[in-house]
Length: 136
Image 1 (cartoon, rainbow, N blue to C red):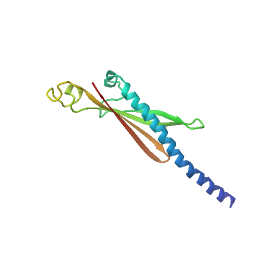
Image 2: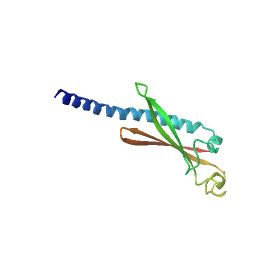
Image 3: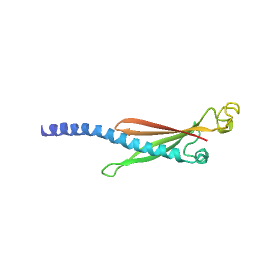
Image 4: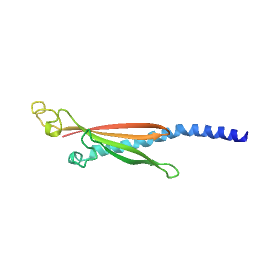
C-alpha cells in the first residue's frame, strides 16, 4: 500500500514538472531565436551570399546542433537550427531572381534569411522559425 501511494505521489510530481519543463523550453528557445535574428541582421551581405554561408541558397539548408541552455544540474539542452536563404523573385537573375531591369531599375537585391529551431519537450517535437529580410 505504501509503495502504491509513493508511486501516485511521484506521478503527481512529474505531472506538475512537465508544465514547468514546457515553459522553461519556451523561454530558452525564444531567447535563442532572439540571438539568431540578431545574427541574421548583422552578418555582412557578402558573408551570407558566400558559398560557405550559414544561410545557403534554398533549397539547400544548413543544420547545426546548438546549446540553448543547461538544467540546474548542468545537463546541456540542445536543439537543431536549420538555416536557408530565399532570394526575392524581383531580384535580377544574377542574384537568383526572375526580375528584369524594367521591373527592378534600381538593381536592388533582397533575401529572406530563414532560421528554424527544432527541439523536444518530452515526446513532442516543436519548431520555431524567424525570418529576417535583408536588402541592398
